[in-house]
Image (cartoon, rainbow, N blue to C red):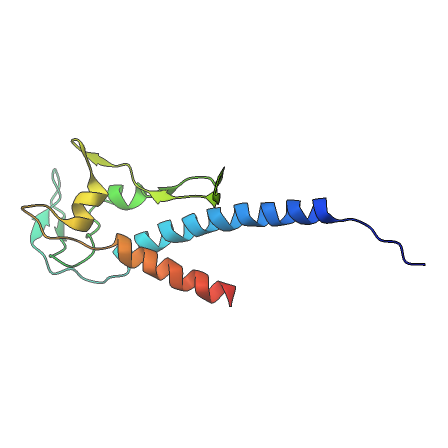
Length: 138
């Protein structure tokens, strides 16, 4: 005689835990991909500057290039949130909260200002992360 065992509760818990880990892994992948956009672009073609207080030179990014990395503060400011349960499922986010006055530096760099052209890196990073997620799910 076959005995039926109800594992619904265990299955739900496993799916719930997997969804939470997947959301957080997605946010980490987005953060890492945005940083990689800045790190792997190659030489920039913008103006040559001296790092304040030093004799070290660095080449800034030009319009259309991802932001150049001078000292790494902006690159290192990218973080992710732990996954949280919402009414739509699990959510986690990649973000930077590095401010320049009242403005988020990432928005100024990514979209540009009236005096500086955009340095796109967020959308390309998200696209890179999406492609990697699709590859992992195949």
